[in-house]
Image (cartoon, rainbow, N blue to C red; front, side):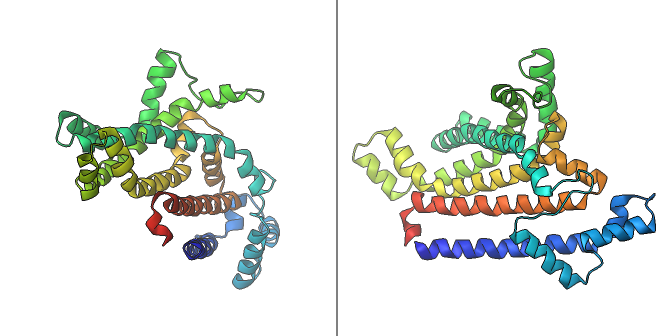
Length: 313
């Protein structure tokens, strides 16, 4: 088991090294001078030269990479040009809405997809199965921002049950802030549930007719226990994999949804940074999202140890 964990840790570090290198190269090979782009067309040559020196862009490329990598090891993602503050601090201030939005979205997706996927596989070919697979295909085809606009129109504008946008005022409590996340979490969760549902159904279909399931039934075990303890437990690894991938995609894919609902999250900050050409913020956000993606996949690999004892050997 220790060898398995070590292999995953080494793989995670190798992936992050490649990501850091790619992000560094992309910023440097982008068309135009990054310093001139960030300052705009009205900047003087002296301003551009000063910013290049400040960002270390006047150094040889290998020296720039060494400085960049060394700062990363110290947790320094650079300083935002327009916010005049460290990028890590700016991202940390915007992390709360994005974190809770991702968490609620994946919980909603799991609560919808897993039970429906299990029942759809158990009642294969039935009207319920056909309806579930059809709705899953429909949900996968619907853009989350369009669904969000429909939810705003119905639940916020017509019924007045939830706020239209925003994240509450500066002094708003946690309950008020979370109420602003209900509609965006629903829009992301419903769309994300389609993939989890299809994987759950397919994985359950693979195991429901296996010998150990028939043996459990022949021993007189209750049908619920047969399905949940024997079938679903052995079908859980593919489901965990797709849940982990979905959670990672939600972290990076909430940009449009946060913009639609006016949430002051990381996605909204990235959009503003792109419009302002604030390269340090864009670069830092890419690295943080990549790190979260790798970390979530590592945690899913660790869950394999608990779900399937064969992985330990």
